[in-house]
Image 1 (cartoon, rainbow, N blue to C red):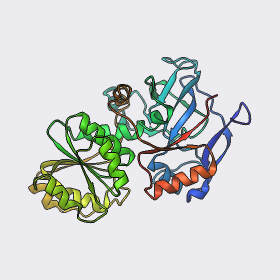
Image 2: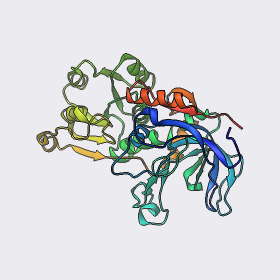
Image 3: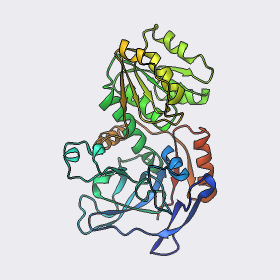
Image 4: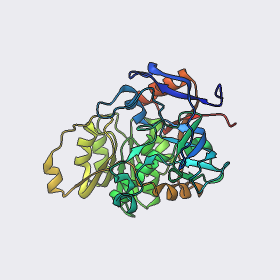
Length: 354
């Protein structure tokens, strides 16, 4: 635990750079404002955005030092004088999206489109620490019987996959969905959500171990795109008709190929560009096949309540690659593993219970 009541241990970086800039140190312990709740963190998950923050983003000025971590679960430690809805001891999951709560977008259930939208761990200090202060609207009661590590691994990736498939692409029974990078955090969520809504799922990944994970989650067919001929396999599995929905968060050459694999009237929904953000796009495929290209990020906060209900029923679950301690070298190695794509599901930082 921390060295004193006014400080806490946290993962942080004081300058931008490679994994070597990460460290675990003592920082001021947050005090909840009147409308906030202080959470004692038990587990916090890493996201790919943590890598970009650590490296430095020209478009996002991050004051240093910075504590990352958008996904966390824990126990309510203290309730601000004007906060309501929770009491000390409640077990909670952190909902990472921050918004004003007053504008027309927020009041219409579209808080993820709020002009003041921010993310815990990106625009504020995050959950890779012993304590985290957030508004009560950013907390959801944890379902009973689900371990801390799994709960921490859920919010960002499942909210993202839910919006991609349900809100944007309108997935439904009888449709065929191609999930790229199917063993990533977003990928494992997308495979399960597509199956939940009755779709046929083709899961693509770069190794047999990752494909085995997708099959365990319910994928109907798996495709190894490490061999170079994977597009032909998708065509074979669909009788050359193509797929109704492509879930992509890699971009680059994968996105270029995905356009060619979409069926007439198909939807390609993308939420990231880890493999490149300027793919080649042949517009003839788009207009002749009447394709829809849909951009997406995370979903409105309200979706997490539904997701956690389904998790509590064991109809959805997170995949945890490993749980690491809040220690400097463990964090550095975790970032190296993420950069090297040597992760299935999520890496979670575990903190001891008080």
